[in-house]
Figure 1 (tube, rainbow, N blue to C red):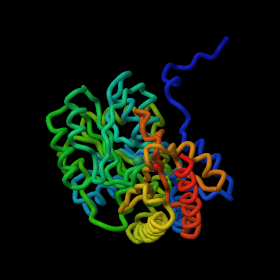
Figure 2 (cartoon, rainbow, N blue to C red):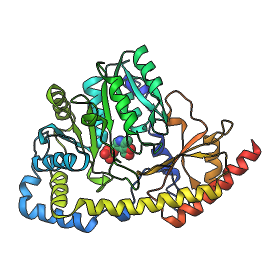
Figure 3 (cartoon, rainbow, N blue to C red):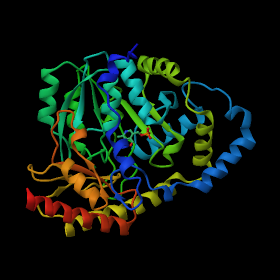
Figure 4 (cartoon, helix red, strand yellow):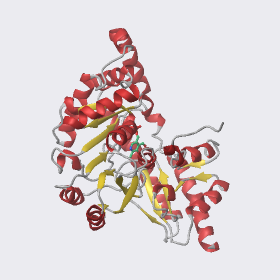
Length: 396
Ligand SMILES: Cc1ncc(COP(=O)(O)O)c(C=O)c1O
């Protein structure tokens, strides 16, 4: 008898990036494809010391089942940090610790999405969100990104013309584009959402990785009072392997999220939560983040300079002030998918942009990651890619 899978599995595909990463496992390929932090910056020794201390001080508790909400001192640390760094009021009770911020997307889907519900996402949008919300058979509507955030006229039109359940946005150094919402766009989004039953979900794993320019308050709590959900993560400021993220939410929504999380995994690893808490208590997280900013800032600088030197003038590139990605737009006639095959022959990889567009556009775009390659490889890789693009342009 044939195996009968659930309907939802028919529309969700394996992550395209995970597939590409297999190709780039070959060490001779310079890969700008992954979205990985630089492992040289993981605070291995400090985390090791924290882990030993947790075992010595609270071994049995750290290995026991625990509450779904998460380790209270860690939630307090996160709440205090919002006040100190972002100037927004969040209480420890409003923080739900999750298994990576990716789990928040799954929980949001479980709590909010019925089959066919409209979800507004950015164009291009974060693949992990597309995959996660697709599991709930949602229908995507998209809003284009300009250099300083979403096209507000388009957002207004999409909101006016459809009943939507949520608007999911990555407001700082977006994955994949590297773009950031300006204060004006943040205010504009908040104004447009006012009085509508559309949940704003603000995903912010990269906000602390700013190399230049000004910090902006999150839309949630900064511009939109009370409403909205804000997501955060330790993946990019400490280490992704711990799978520690969180969601800021309150009231009935928080209660529903807790039920959904209980049904999913009971709670996030007790040990991981305690180790990260010990780490942030015994060390200065700001000093560590400053190292990441310096390093990624240099890597980004080398990538931007190399692009200016080696890419043809027709290639348009975003100039992110932080995060891990640059976004390239080529002339309409060029297929980044086809360019990818050529690039692999030249031993350099990137992620073609089309999967980030649920409407099937974006053929001429691609994403470059600068956090996971050193400066020498960045320059060499961009040089190879630049000559590949030039050849491609001449042929097409
Ligand atoms: C925009 C965005 N949201 C969420 C995630 C998931 O991160 P985490 O490791 O916290 O699950 C990522 C990871 O790359 C991301 O880019």
